[in-house]
Image 1 (cartoon, rainbow over the protein chains, first blue to last red):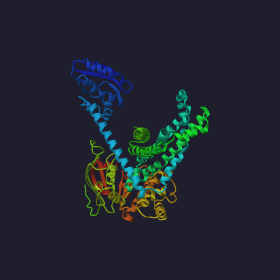
Image 2: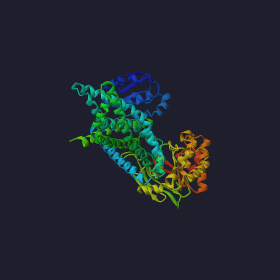
Image 3: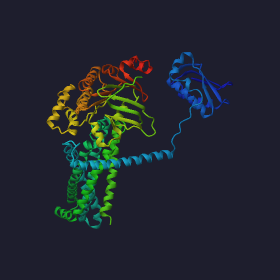
Image 4: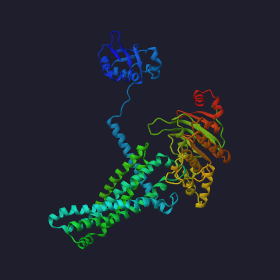
Length: 367
Length: 251
């Protein structure tokens, strides 16, 4: 493609093939030629064009914008007759003249305001859902209408029994790691034997409930969010609504019940396994006899520690369910949206668990 | 455009405007529509003209920006939850891809409305499910999961579920979409049978000519969010409007 500088009549001649192979590489030259002229009104002479394809035609349309950069007005001339039909399909002629005013893009404050508004709306929706789901879970204990028999047991097995092995393995290993880390510090003061006290308190107050909840959020919370998001994608949630069936009661309430029952049970188990892992590591590596270790664990443990751990685990189960149902119901888009709902469910749930954990810590232990 | 006089209306739509978002342009603008008891009505139009949005607004899933929707005489968007649920129990909806609950068997899906809204015991629910599955040609599929069925079978199962509570009005969103011509015809014959034998008002959203011909009911055409024709299929075919002519003679 050849571009001839603007002549005395204000005509810029473009000749040869204007195609995907030639046009994109000529943009800089066209910009220079449109700038380095005294004419404010330029006519593009296209009579010498030999070939035109879609990219070439769109490139010609975009010359108006290039001319406008230098306050030039541009008029596209007629293409040769042999190319006229094709040029008409791309509506080449209709874009001559000055380009339309670009739409105003929202500024930083607009975007911040919009994000803040969306954020407030999301928080309000979350609070509405949390209260609706909590109420539905409580009222369904009395009036089972809308809850399918058997789904609670099915969910409890999925959350509790199926998640038991991974929780047990992780807590066993974590108990061992905690013992070794505590011993490394306490050895400096000749207080190796206090490892058992530290382990008992650490596992029952913190690590047991927290790690169990994080694992349940990753394993079951994500599955809940993916299931509900997929149900929205396939219009199952809409179908339930048109059948006058509350999706919260049918789908979410059994999940809430299952979580509230099984997470505390998993936490109790996690506490035992964590203590067992720590005890075994202590006995094998710290030269403390099993009976001494177990006695110290028993003496260090207070009922309050176990109960606060259980209270925490109930609240963690509640927040995991609410977050995963919320993320599932907020699903937008296609397959990628399901993935996004799943990921955001896990991230939000873990964040919420840690915030709740801190809140409980301040309530129970801040003096 | 003729405006049929409907005496006993099951659907009344007045000046309906719907938009997805506060600042979004409306998908439907000033739509007026009335469907009578026992009518067979096809809502037609090209892709993106607002057919499915109209259906979703009529069944209460998409709230209007302005205007009114009355379903079986009740303003569906102005009802409290219990009233709306009571109303929806008199309505059946068949979604475009069936919307069968993937975690339940076909039998459980079809029996779900009975299980949730009636005092029918398990034996009665099973018998009703068996009869409906037989009517839609799915005998023996009760224990299968929806994922084990073909697209056409899933739609027939969805039709059985939509009819389980013997609704007064049945809405179908693109019943023939994605199906081979024979399966699509089978679904249309089922809809005709429900309409003629049980007097169920049927509202079908479709853009399939063959289906429109077979159902041979009243035809409401939407274009760009507005009703541009309301009459019989024959009147539509004989109408001189360019969009109608193009719709019936796409070649």
